[in-house]
Amino acid sequence: MIDKDMKIGELLQSHPEKADILLEAGMHCLGCPASQAETLEEACEVHGIDVEDLLKELNK
Image (tube, rainbow, N blue to C red; front, side, top):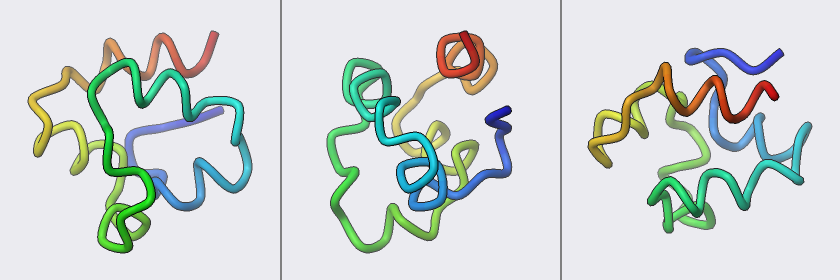
């Protein structure tokens, strides 16, 4: 299960198929070194995305 404290790098490594969902949500910097160490919650804050809504999509 993906949670808001998971780092983007960890999420993409363990669930690479979820990259499209992140891109569609507006996270276009997935390859950026800084994003790899950010939690999903931190990345959502930076991009103005509701973390709870994104988690619902990611955990379908």
